[in-house]
Length: 335
Image (cartoon, rainbow, N blue to C red; front, side):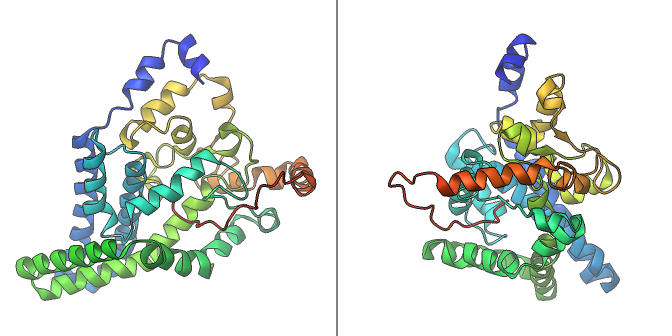
């Protein structure tokens, strides 16, 4: 990549994209929270008929907040690292019952060990399930008790300090108190109920699609071989991949670029032959270049995939351990 950028005098342009902007950060945060409170108000003050739509919108905005948490884990919300973490905790992590410190500790190994069966914390791979189609893969992980309940509860209560639990309690106590005073206890109760109902259902529905979509079906090797970019436009993108989160290949190649500049980075990399030949999806559900078709591109369309995987697996079994212990169990589902 660096050779391509130097050859086309793009190195400085890409580097400039890595400058965090507090204005962009707060604009994104405020916009997401505005959607949440707007649809809470519609349900509470107008009609319960808004409830299904409200849960979809709020679930998608919760996903958007976690996308920003992801940027915070790379220190991309603000130039000052302490400011970055304070913003992330107050506006993103506390409402989602997450710990930025824990998120960062689990997410960064995904970048450092991309595709590694033992150490990649985001690795999901099931060739047998893919033979039955993308919907089977999606439902398998969607209905997984371990991913839906165990992983979320573990992250919330078992992997964070008592001090952080206290911060979560104080945050929620303060927010509900302010809502009670300003809009009434009924609105505060409606917000609390809608928030956690959406968190348990729609957030999981959306996030499950994303954690499959980033790498599933691609063969571990290099970033270019094992990561895909998602559609760059369309209404569905707002719900599934807010804040340019769908440009996952671009992010892995340039993890120093904040979300609001990822599309610019993606365009700067166009023309690099290896990048252009990587998995670049154009739609989500329809066509040869769709995301769901891409989930099984290697497993379903490349007959050499399973043979290659079998060789690697056999080699890992027969390879001398050289006194190194097997990798410990790791937490997954942080995307």
